[in-house]
Length: 396
Picture 1 (cartoon, rainbow, N blue to C red):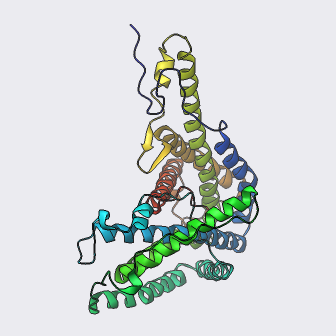
Picture 2: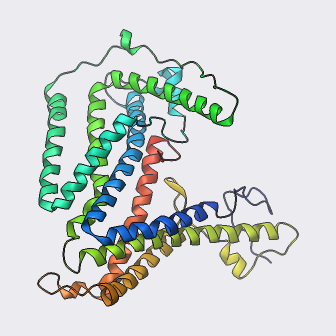
C-alpha cells in the first residue's frame, strides 16, 4: 500500500504542478548582481576607510529612498486601522467608512506610489553623507549627534501629545469631507509604457487623497506615527555605517568587515539556491507521478516533505531549509574568509588591541552563524514592513 501524497497547498489535483515563471530567474538575477557588483563593493570596502565611507553613504542613500516610500504607505495604513479599530471618540466602524477608504483598506500596491522628487532625493543624499561622515569621525561623535537629533525630534511631538488638548475633529467639517476617487488619467499614446504611467498616476493620486484625509482626521496620531517611523528608519539604515566604527582598529576592521560582507553574499546565494532547488525537485516529482507514473516512495517521498515555509504570514516564499543553509554557509564562509585574511592579507592584531581569545576558529564560526541569523531576521523584517505597508515590492 503506497503512502498518500502530502498536501502541497498549491497543487489542486494529482499531476498538476503549481504555475510558475521561468525557472530560477530570480536567483539568476540576484546571482549575477552579486557576481558583478559584489567584488567591486568588497574591493571598495577593504581598500581604505575613505572608500568604505563613500560606499556606506551610498548604501544609506539608497536605503533611505526605499524606506521613504514604505514609510508613507505604513503610516497611511496604520492611520486607517486606528480610524476604524481604535477606541477614541473619533473612530468609526469599518462598515461606516467612506467607500474609497474601504477599497483602500483592501488594496495591495505593486510598489510604493509616493516617489521622491529630485529635490527630496538631493536633500536625503546630503543628510546621508553627513551621517556617513559622522561615522567616519568615530563612535563618540556619531553617538552624540544621534542622541541630540533624537531629542530635538522627539521633544515637540511629546509636548504636543501630552500638554495639548486636541478635541476630536467633527466628521462634518468641510476639510474632512469623505475622499472621492480621482478622475482616470488618459494615457499619452498607446504604448505599454504610457498605459503603465497613466495607471501609476491614478494610483498615486488616489493614495494622496486618502493620505491627506487621514492626516486631517487624526492629526495627533499622525505626528506620533511620523516620529516613530522616522526614528526607526534612521536607526535601521544607520546599521550600514556601524562597520566604520571599528574600521581603523589595526588588524580588526578590515578582515572582520571583509569576512562579514562576503559571508552575507554567500548567505544570500545559498539560501536562494537551496530553496529554489527543493521547490523545483518537488514540482518535477509531482508532475511525473501525476502522468501515470508510480506513486513516489523512498527518497522521492522524502523530498516531497520539503521545503517548509519559514514564516508564511510574513514571507511565504522563504523556506526554513533555505534559511538554515544560508546560516551554515555564512558561518563556514566567515571562518574561511577570516582565515584567508589573516594568512595572506593582514597580521593578527596584538593582544593589547584585540584579545587573542576572540580570534579563534570557534569564535569565527559562531560570529558567522550569528551574522547569518541577523541576515535572515533582516529579510523577514523588510518583508514584515512591506506587509504593513501592503506593498509587494519595496524598490524605488
